[in-house]
Image (cartoon, rainbow, N blue to C red; front, side):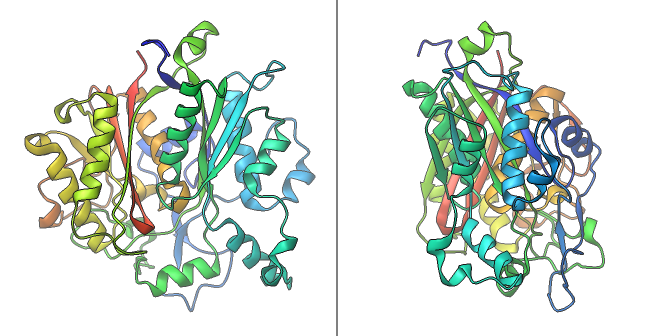
Length: 407
């Protein structure tokens, strides 16, 4: 590619508890609307954590048969809605013949969720998985009649960042003309709520759902599960300019490492998280003092937030007191495999609206995280040209994504 041919985002499709499209999501995010409520989709009285961030009914894309769409699994509805609305947003709903559109989807526990729902209905697919139909990526690829390669990425909470990095790479290699990249997760089920609850990873502030998830706060007691997804249209910048497409941002840098410490417990030593951030900044050719906003992974767990604070302090150095940092999970919940994708959308909002986004419920910062320049409770106007999004997943999957304002 030429120097001008960076890879940019020209379309966004999403569903979340605070919005089913970019404009609605941005408006509700900036007004600090919380999507966390008591779970009503199934009985939760015997669960230690009884709250979650749920998306409700997913919109049916224009031109799709409503009854056929509603007959599909909710994870399929999520993927179809996000992909189709992203293409529409990019002006590619009616795409020319021969356009090679690739698809990279971050997913997690896809079959477990399918089997659990089937079992609750009296089915036996969990005991004979050979009967399982095609996966979500294949279904979306076929339904949208895409002509490029497809790939499923499963890297826990880091899946969305990985998907964006792979989509960018496919464009750089010339394998596709356009790439759909993102992640989806409909993971709030009785099994997941029980599993994460037994790990003591979930907040038990059931009487105050909107105040339950408290990243970096001294009173935090765990994360809150969420569901949803976000898919992006990626193109080479020269092609986007040529067709007059709106450019949200450039996908400027990516870094990834694995600490190989434990399946679920964050590594107490920050070296690999530090390395992932440094890789991303080097890839984007950005110095720490040039970062205008960081969307932290910060899930509200006692151990995880302190680990990330150490990583940020090391990478930012003297700039740690100046670079604004927040976690938007306090509003959206933790979308698990889709977390990185929805937080990339939050970074687009920061770039487009020229604000730094807040960590709500941050009333009393943990002394071990107090060195950070927290954006507390309200958005702050600021010139934002460079954003960073951290996503650190189970199994030691450490990723960092750098998005720059489109030049």
